[in-house]
Image (cartoon, rainbow, N blue to C red; front, side):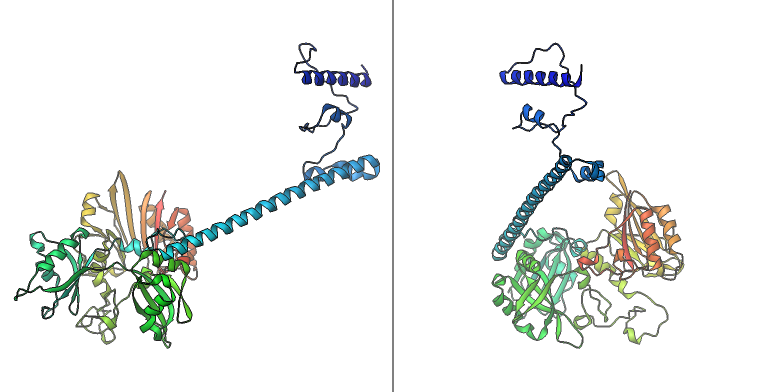
Amino acid sequence: MSPAQTWKANCKQSSQIASCLIQGSAPDIGDQEIFSTPNVRPQSKRPLSADSSIEETLSEPKKLRYEDLTSITEDKELSHLDSLSKDVISAKLGAALDFVRLQHERITKLESELLNAKIAFANSVIAQFNSQQTTFSNSQAPPTPGLTTRPSYAQAARVQHAPVLVANFAKGCAPADRVSLEKMEQLLDSHVGGPVPSSVRQKDSTVFVRLNNPADIDRAKTILESKQNSDRNSMFSSISRSPKLYPAVALFVDLDLLPGLKNELILRNAAFKGKIDSVTQIFKKPGSNKGHVKIFFNNRETRDVALLAGEVDFFNTTARLVEVLLDREVRRCFNCQGYGHSQASCRSTSPRCGKCAESHRTRDCTGITKKCAASASLAEVVLENNLDIILIQEPYARNFDSPTLVDIPPGYVAFHSLDREHAYGAVILVRLSLAVSCRAVSRSSLNHVAAVDLHSCGKTFRFISMYVRPSCHDSSNVFRSVFRSLLTPLTVIGVDSNVKSSLWNSVTTDRKGMDLEEILLVFKLNVLNRNRSNEILVEHLAAIFLGLS
């Protein structure tokens, strides 16, 4: 059969198919339908559209269309335009223009979608701002969604504050001596099942009692209200629970404005009315009247919204408002070497040397032996923060032959392997009840490395405390040796590495820091130090690593 006859047969057959489709019946052309493609007139591979017909397809068999830019650039016929006819060139140019028009339509559609997305984003920001303003004016509203829910470093370190009871002595009933912890236990009848105080602090005629059990606050108040003096008058004029305050810090405030700052803040910020308890100075820049001021809010939502705004208005000026961070709050007294207060407010009657821990000022010390007087406050810090596990480097101990740790808080057990060089060693303290329930096993074998295993929930958790001297020139091998011998799938490491790296907030990274970073990658350890963007002041000497294989 010639090509012309084949073409006519196909046309006839296509007409039969079309008529059968219109009539809703299948063509009767035998058991099998055979379609042949003529060599001289190839059919287009473009699929039929919904409004096209077979006749139109047969009348335009060579309709050219480019699907993408590659099909244009890889068209070999375009490199030989001189050999192409005018109709072919026109067809190719039309196909290219169709492709450009299609792309233009797609770009226009994308621009429209992008504009809609921008409008939707702007609407969401406006809605969020309006909800924040509603929260700002309504103290009973839920916390602002924009604030982070991740616990701060201060919350993680201090855990949960115990309740404090504030008792004011009646006129003429204040004892001559300061109220001690033993005296408060007698007043609360702790020896016969009464509430147990954990600490007592007295300022003038006011006593602050911190209780171990939050549920005892009401019972302790009732007991103290029933106490009478020799004249059968009540010993205390008022007893109340210390209000829970939420602090924020205003930076670089003119301290001359401090006396009227509280009233000014309430006047300039309507949402602060009745929400500010007090305003106190915490820092003064040397040679200037500028300083930092702590603002105590009695409402958490108001404080959070103020922090979200980032600044406060007063006296026709503004000041940056930031979160109170635990590292900024740590203060050391240079009189008694204790923490939590400064020398100006120290209540100690005698000074304590920061070098030898004797009863004289540090500047007057002539001793040769250097001791860490600050560690004498270790028990107070541990008990105040209710810590279970404490990783210590450079501990303070007595005796060379058999070092004994100083001032271990009651109810804790120490794990270490200290020797004569205990000043450069490492120690781990574990709460005794936790050590017993978790079957603690010591893995300490070196002076500068302390390790302990705690078993819980069918798993073994290993805690490692490690110290590396600044004079150690081969610290990389020290780390590798310790990690190879002690690392387990669940390990927490606290280390005073004396190396600098931006991973734990050093300004620069030294060679030792680069080596330690490579070691951390090899052993798949994660750095738990908070980054600098969160404004946590972490010393570059310390780092905490977590190993989870």
